[in-house]
Each structure stands twice: as C-alpha cells, then as structure tokens.
Amino acid sequence: MSIQDTTVDYARKLDEQDPLQAFRDRFHLPEQADGSSYIYLCGNSLGLQPKDTAAALTQELEDWKNLGVEGHFHAKNPWMPYHEFLSEAMARVVGAKPEEVVVMNTLSVNLHLMMVSFFRPEGKRNKILIEFDAFPSDRYAVESQLKYHGLDPQECLLELKARPGEELIREEDIEQLLRERGEEIALILLGNTNYYTGQYFDMPTITRLGHAKGCTVGFDCAHGAGNVPLELHASGCDFAVWCNYKYLNSGPGSLGGVFVNERHADNPDLPRFAGWWGHDKATRFGMRDPFKPIPGAEGWQLSNPPILSLAAIWASLKIFDEAGMDRLRKKAIKLTAYLESLVQQLGEDTVKIITPSDPERRGSQLSIQVRNADRSLFDRLTAKGVIADWREPDVIRVAPVPLYNSFEDAWRFYRALEEVLTSK
Ligand SMILES: *Cc1c(COP(=O)(O)O)cnc(C)c1O
Image (cartoon, rainbow, N blue to C red; front, side, top):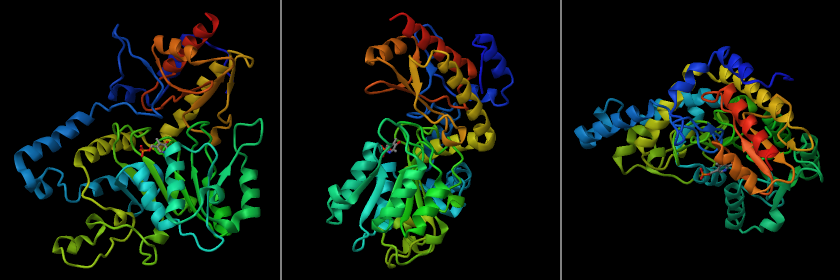
C-alpha cells in the first residue's frame, strides 16, 4: 500500500471504515496525566487489559469465598476441568485441534518440558538449530538442555544467521543448512515470528524440510499467537509453545500455551516429566495407579492450574472468538502497511524498517532502525506519550495491534516520531 495522504483526517477515515473499530472500547487504554490515552504500541510485549477481565476474576474469587474447596465441582465454572473450557478457543487462535493444545505453566517452563520429550540426541544427531538472535530465555533453555544431556553448546548449538549486511534470515539459507547438516540436527527450534525483526517464518516449509532430514521441528510462537494465522496443525510441526500475555492480552506472567501434534498424542515412547494433572482423569484421585497420561497435550500437564490466570485467558479468548482471527489478520495487514507507509515518508536516510515488507512474512510489528539515533531519541518519544520498545543500539519496535489500536494511533506515532526527529 502506498499512501500519499498523511493527514489525520485520512487516518480517521480509515478508522470509520474499520469493521473492528468497536473492539478498542473493550480494552483499558493506559492514560496520561492529562487524561488522553497513551499511544500504546507495545502489545507484543504486554497486551492491554480487556474490560471483561475483572468480572471473570471476581467470579472465581467469589466462588472461592463462598464455596472453598467445593468450588472444584460447584463453582459456576468448576475448577476441576477449568482448563478444558479454554481448549477450543485456544485451538482456534493457533489453528489446531482442541486435543492438541493445553494452557499450562509459563513459556520457558513449557519449552523445557517439550524438549524433555522432543530433544532426544542420538549419536551424531545431537544438535539443536535456533536463530542467531533468538530470545535470550530460549537460548538459555536450549543451552541448558544440551548440557543436561552432557553435550557442549559450543559444538551442538547451531545458529541461523542473516548474511553479512542483512537483517533477515533467508529461507534458502535454512534450506542449504539443512541440506548440508540436517543429519546432525536432532531439533529445529525457531521463533515462528522473530521477536527482534518481526520476521514470520514459513512454518510448513521449514517443517517439511526438517522432517525430510529426520529432524524434530518445534516453534516458539510467543510473538505469533494471536498475531499471525499459525495453522499449527496444518504446518505439521511436532510441538509449539507460546505465552498468552503478549498479543493474547491475558495479563502479566499469565500461563502459557502448548501444542503437541496429534501424531504424538498417544506415543508411549516419548519420555516426559509427569505430574498428577497429566494423569488419566478417571483414576487421578485413586492416588495409587501408575502414571497413565491423558492422550494429547493435556497429558503433559503437571499441576492443578492457577484458576485466576486461566480466567483472564478465557476472558480474552472470548474476545478473539468474537473478532475472529481472519478479520483480525485482515485489519493487521492494513494497519501495519499504513504505519509502514507513514514511517517511510520520513525518508530512507532517516529510518529503515528491518521487518519484512511482504505482509505474508510479518505480523503486527515493525522494527524501525533510526539512523544515528540513541536512547535519548526514544526517551523523547516516550515523553510525547508513545509506549513502544527500544532495542539497543538503534531499533524502535512498534506493534499496531488490530484489536485495540486505531489508524489514528499509527498516525499519532508517525507525527511524534517526525517531531522528535526534526527537533534534534
Ligand atoms: C516473551 C518471550 C519469552 C518470555 O518467556 P517467559 O517464560 O514467558 O518469561 C520467551 N521467549 C520468547 C521468544 C518470547 O518472545
């Protein structure tokens, strides 16, 4: 999309035409001292609070207050099967079958649990492939798993790097690496949407190439869930993990999500760390039976889950069901392209967007490199009411989220950035 019209009127016109416009009002937008809302473009870090969340939490607090332990069976939404209430809506968001997903633990914990089952080094096939600029927690998790298996990360951690002078990883380079070293790789673990560049990888192709070489393939979808159409089941990948507090608006530190492909649902050969909540529901309270995992993703659960967090996630998932991932994606593409075209008005010698320009290869994020910038530029942007994210040395990450960001937000950000740049 090329936009010549940089007026606020045009932004407002786009908002009027936006079929999802009403959803903005379903969220609490943080306010500045003068009562106006911040330009919140940080939904890739912490999504905003839906107005429905408080009532959902209060329901559980009331049931606990009035019923005590009986709430496990007699709460309005009984706590015993509570996590099951989320499975269908969660499956719709990530494109999976309900049996393939479960909400449990938090992201880094789930990554470890999945690697217990799906990173099984054997002989020369003992390496893990990740992105060079993987999120630090993922790198720590992977390195520690290698060490846990007595392997040296120096030797067994393979990293996908962009070519010198480039920011994005070329898919042909992934292909070549797999052709050359695929037989050494036990596990391919990529962020499906890279947190830094916003690059959205072609999951079906990577999965197909990896499987052809005998590798297990998993994705960290922290920046993909609720953002891009993941279609996890169709992608064929073996497992995926994500968090629910970024694009999925479920509150700080909320529980994460796990996908286990149905081909592994009942596989007795997979090692796993077990706990009572993953055990056969019929005999869970028998307390004496040997561990018999529930088929599917639920069988990886360890503990009875924190209901308050599940309640917040459920409240948010209902909004996703109302809006629908298809409509959200449509708006996301338009809104991101609009913001991109505005930022490009600032000129190539001032800004460079490192996120892919192809809408199929990105979600609702732009990583904007500002030439000769330092942190003070970002601080001045913050002083103008922009909440975004700064990555050293010179990148501003902004996430125009289709559920609650408007075209006018995008315009206000552009105007603020322009003012900060020209007042230097
Ligand atoms: C946000 C994020 C995390 C955070 O992990 P937690 O365990 O939820 O604290 C990890 N990895 C990636 C890729 C992320 O984007």
